[in-house]
Length: 439
Ligand code: UGA
Image (tube, rainbow, N blue to C red):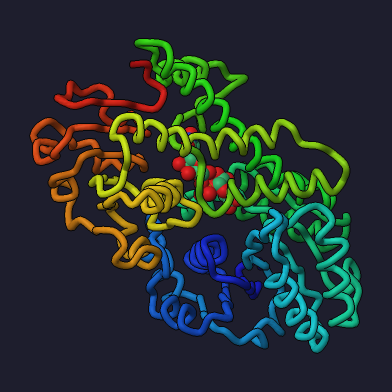
């Protein structure tokens, strides 16, 4: 019965496109909608607009089965379930920009005013607590002339997938959260998800708690990273101390867990930094000074400052110094550079008039869109080192593990700053510094 449902997914970014591709590849009737015409056409041709493991394959299977891509919202009129996956970017004050989601729900409201169906609308976009009740529901009810909970279902359904494992996370999520009133729509969605993911816990709660769960999740992950980064900084001042052994050991304590304890140059990407800022902004608005969250953010920003201080200590003035940066993607196995710490580092180096060469296995094109001819783009990892006076490893790409004495020979000065300790086990003929290892 559920395979006959018609599902609309609105907003074909990381979450929307992955979700649409996975559902369609499983045989569901799916319509993916995005207002960007060029992007929609590209997706309809089976080409994802960003790199994600297995996405192209899954999308193509979906397109062959029952996935239609359009930029026309009227096609949601006969849909049974509508997922909203548009982005909620960051505003200058840290709060989230709701313009896109408001636009989407306005059109959805107008469209469902004409249907006899009782569609269920699920919001996957990350929104601060209260947004569903005070912004989304009133718009939908006004535009449709219908009542949530009676004429249509309205459910908060936060998403926890990670870029670089988006397909896997969508197929095998660790939890499903459904927030909203206990209506027939909620029971129906619970059944549908239980059918889709038989062994996965389903948490049923209200809207505001579901909205808060998403921020709790991401801010806890950010806290783990800043915690380990702070310890890494302490370790750097203890000769011989090694943060990886510490992380591995404390990670074996089941109360702590071994994930997200990988010290580095700070967290980046389109989610953790944005969600931390939004939660801090929200906490202040409701009268709570979020000291811990403030510290998590401050520690994160300091990681990069410390790298800059170390560079100036070692190299003196950075003007005209040739510096190689390995990795501009915000993490490995993606070409996404949004809020990437590597990109921030390049900006800081350019301010100091350093000569920057970069290499990244996937994100060269995206990096070029930001910096144009302000920096050099190496054709290969070895050539990125030619005449370089300093090598900084920012992203934990597997490809960088091949670095050795032979490859670094072409450097003019063998100063290496390894933010991911990729080379920490090698004996290098270099002035080697790693985040989290005491010199
Ligand atoms: C994050 C969350 O992990 C997802 O659960 C969530 O669904 C998503 O945000 C979202 O809100 O959409 P993602 O942005 O893909 O996912 O990236 P992460 O894997 O969380 O990595 C974020 C940053 O933290 C990266 O810069 C990464 O290098 C850094 N990181 C991560 C570390 O420095 N150390 C670690 O141990 C783990």
